[in-house]
Structure formats: structure tokens, C-alpha cells
Image 1 (tube, rainbow, N blue to C red):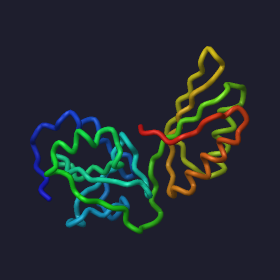
Image 2: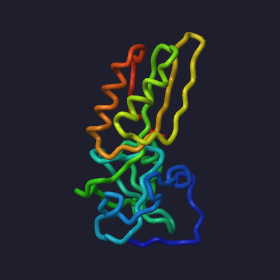
Image 3: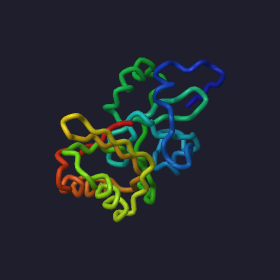
Image 4: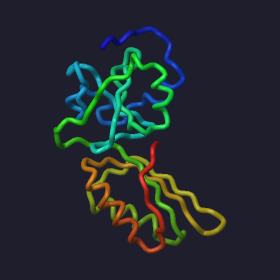
Length: 177
């Protein structure tokens, strides 16, 4: 894999290449990703689709910045596929204890204390919330987006199920950033 430097990034790259795991840039074995043919290359998880273990993923060689990993059905993949020479095979490693950013959207009937219930539930699950955005509508509904760190897809499924049981919540789903 050749990583050139000093060339201008394409528009697609500039949109998708913001790393999201901590630390922001890792060698592939630290990020839980195996890059076929090179175990020393830097790997970052694309912010646009926030891949996590269990997702079908693909790799894109960036210009001077390692490999950016996307969920295979990410909206940016079509643009990246226009440069097939920069696509590399990647897969999840079997390493444990990795944290990945994930964003969920919660929708429902707006009421007092709802945000408190959601954040308390997440605190009880020992999840680190890194961003939160809530907006109400004229029809007394709300849309809440929460970005947090999670280490296991099963924990994400559990949290989504628990939030769905909060009175007034009618939908919870994972979203890209």
C-alpha cells in the first residue's frame, strides 16, 4: 500500500476522513482493524458512518493519512469506489476492549424529565456521552441525538432496547454522524 503525500484531497476525502476513536489515530491492531497485507499502517474510523464491530466494512487509502474505514453501505462509499486502486480489504480483528463512537437518535413525545431519564439510563450502563443535541417541535414531540462510546454491539442493542421502554419514546435507531 502506497501512501502519497502533498497532494490535494478530493471533496469526498475531506468529508469522510475525520477520525473518531480515542486516540484519534491508531495503528490497525489498536483500532481493532486488520488491513490486508500491511499490519503497520495507520487506521481511522470514518466519522460519516461510525463503524463498529459487527458492521460490514471497507477500507480507503487516504493521501498521507493511512486507511479510512467505512461501513460498506455508507453514503460516501459510492464516491470512494470511483478510485478502485485506493480500496483495500479490511476486517475486524478479534481484539477486545475497544471503544467506538456511535450516535443514536431518539424520537417521541416531549415531556419534562425525559432527557434526565435517558442520560441516567446511559450513566447506569457506564457509557461516556460525548455529544448530545435535543430539539422540540411545535407538535410537542422531540428529536434527541446522543453520541457516546460503546465497546460491544450487544451493549448498544441493550441500550436501544432500554431507551425504547422509556415512556413517551416511540423510536430509537443508530445514525451516522
